[in-house]
Length: 405
Image (cartoon, rainbow, N blue to C red; front, side):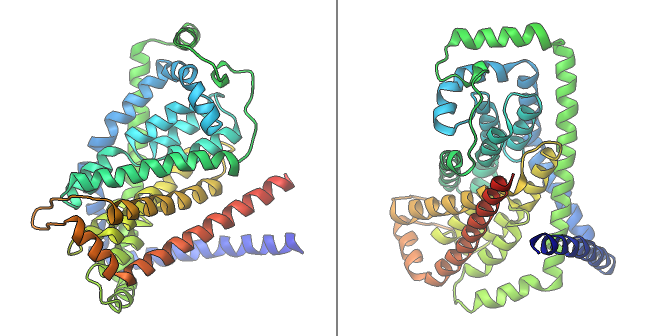
């Protein structure tokens, strides 16, 4: 009976998806000017913001991988990564790549480690849960300084994001169980600089093909990845514009205006758009009268969740592996909840002096806005509750599948 229900659900899902896509294509034909404008905006966002900031990091990460740096840092960082996160030392490369380069390079690095046999499936599952993150240039530069006119707010968002990511790493070792292999050197608890150099020389002697080959391959792979990222950004910008033109955002605005809050109109629609593509969502949230703890917490949650544009890119990079997508998505839901909560605490109860041009925000006004905007807080708590429900549902389903397997 359960098998019959499962097959029927899968069949219905396979029918619904083409219907949605066909409806979307018809909508594009009926609204060509708006959709072309959205495509152009997505292209400019990718070309002006994402490509210049992400491409150098991607090339650099590819170069380090090709030159054998993964083996060096794997032996060096094993005493930290193994006891804390229950992943091999080479996982530090994916974590550092995700924290410095931004989405989706953490996922790409995890897939590379798994495909080259440096980590196992359970370890890759845990590592992916907390290593695919937003980069500091995006959080501090684009969101903080660019959208909220305050680099200091950007650092608050970044601290919330990174702290929550490391917390997910600690939690993932219990949620996604699986023993570490004991044979590779990178899994040992005790390591040294001498051992790290030994692993590096071992790789160079057996796999190194010359700097010219590594450089060319690194640039080629980086450009392929960037074109993929650009395509996802453009498509999801069009989807957001379609939701706006279809009136869905208008309905959300109606309910948010009932709350009599200046910022609810912006952060509710912005949060909805950000679930699809974070850059556009953060931009819409920042258009409110002034930042307050609730809007900043919503922005932190969006940055940590990543948006389905990023998740689509992640699914592409892990498509040829045994790494499961649903546990990753559940971890990102929990990441959003924790990051939003940390940001809410920092901006509400700690002294945060912010100097915003034409938008002067003091610590006192932050607390006043937080206490008076209770309806916004209830809305945010409701959204976080839904994400928490999704997280626990995904985890329970994943554990049932593992028990059956």
